[in-house]
Image (cartoon, rainbow, N blue to C red; front, side, top):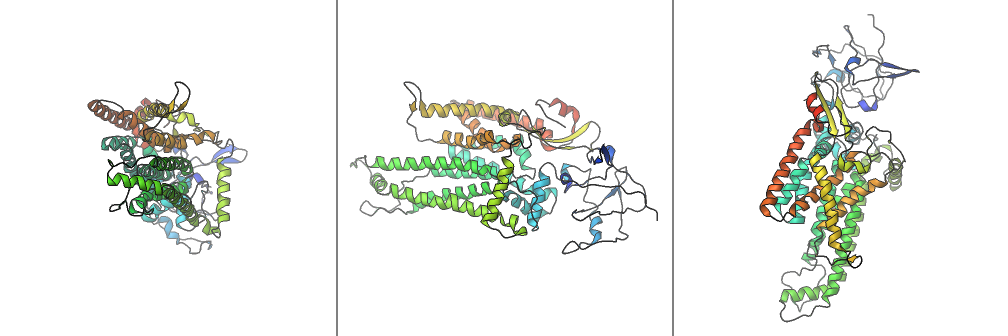
Length: 561
């Protein structure tokens, strides 16, 4: 048997967990070569009866080999023998595994049947966590990858498996935002309006169908904000049924304990968000500020209770509320603060610690010292000045609301002439631009509501409604920190701010004074948002589309196919 010359092949980190053609090496000079797997002209077409694969070293997992002719038809292959195998695995794998899944590749290699963009890091790390291996990606906390690992455990190391958890999270964001808006406005119509806008946002669609970690913290941020808003609207001075004026006021009553439930859930979701990505810490600042406002209001109400005269015109229930507020306010505030030490410090710390068990256990003991070192490594990475600034899609924070530089996720090359498949991360233009204007309007409303400028700057007396404050804090805590980040940034870092610009849009539409006009305006706006979603769907989804359509939609800089 006479063999042809060897054809060297290279597997790079960017090509893991995807189908790749064997391609011809391109000579770059000075001894450097490049293997351009995205160029159809570089495919290595060979002839012969036998194929021999030589492994030059250990460390590469080759999952399957499929042979195709130039016409795209699969060529049957059988194993005739193997030699020179060394036991580098605890359980050696049979060589037949290389050819036992011949029907699993349909179509050409691309995003649909392999990893794309940062999936090469996060999907890989999810697999490693699932199988007790040391993780490759260590620049973010582990929980997001662990949630992906659950999808891989259920559906296998396939695109559906590693994208399942993120897609499910994207679906859950919609009812979560619905509940948040309904909690703040008490109006189902407004809640439905906001939920539909979120569903038709292109960034929400693109970010939740790729196996990266951004979806998970955003869901938990929405839920923790919902829980804090429920606490702010809870009756901290409720008197239990059956209480009498002659009885002794009790701090630990059923109504009081019920007010702690949203705080406990808020701490849980806050811990989950931080353990998924550090943007959860930004949200924690806003939650702490809102809790401080709630405590201030309770203490102030307790002091006011001493100035209220207990007149005969009061009902028995009103008298009890005043008496109990006098006796119990300070005690209940202290109990609530003590509970919050558990809810917002101990529980998140425990979640964070537990999330590092699969991360650290393959390489040693899970200790607080090792976890702290992992945080130092992450901080050093994210605070490196200029890191990634040469990336062609690097986009500073001020560009995001105006979609000045969408993020290119993927482009497939093996497409028919006149067609293309691409995935760009960008917002729905209508939702982003109107949202930016509405957010500016909300800031103006917030300032006008709480500050008086005539006769000198001073605070106005509020009406107790904290919707604007919660919205402003939620947006600022997710957007402002990026101003200080010294490394490269991209438009998808705006994702956690998108629910708040949609909330701002909802608040502004609710200001329309005529009910029928308001309803019609909301219907028209949602319909237009759906239209823009449909127009740009090919850019957001990777759908095979005529290039004439894609060319017509090049309305923004840096939009590619």
